Length: 260
Image 1: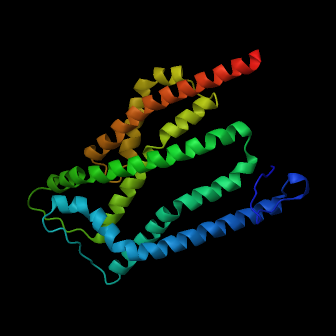
Image 2: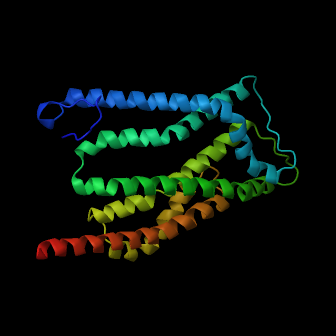
Image 3: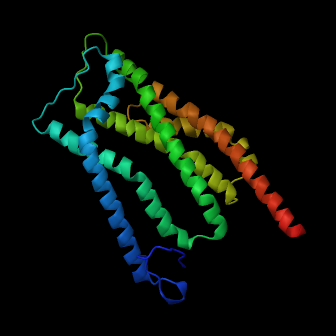
């Protein structure tokens, strides 16, 4: 694998090739940068914790008049602050993490692969953020359903840890679920799948998406399943259209090069 890195601290062997030990050294350097970025982000997350918790608490306060959390253990509040600081640290450091991954992988990519890398990474980040946003805004009706399903004789008192764990895992699950169009477009560009074949599989896609939505939603309630499944189905057809357009552009360029 060759390297085209211009960074002064990137190890490059004679002739432009890197040995296995130089790859390991570069990986260690980039992992160290990622760890430092996450630690700095976590330190910022320690001070941002009250604001982030208040933001995450908003859907619960729309359901319950008294939306104060409880702590059932002495160290529970402290542990939650540590955990949320780590979550915030990863979120804050995500651009640096992706940049380090990109700089490590770039030397091993062909020119046409580098051309698609940035759009794919941008699309992946955008779709993940969209999925997390859908999870956040669907939490209100989800909590209303989960609260009402137990009957009026049950008054919910949530611990902050259990609530934060639920909403974080929901945002993560929805974000991952929204990533599958990127995979479908990539498979079409690699000629593993074709837009016509994906269109023929639309009935199967509905079943598979319903199963995925039922499995990855932490709460398992029908509202969350619908909130995740419907956008995934829409994105399934969008990925078919994007793949068809990209393949058409590739064929047009190939014909131009052949004619030239």
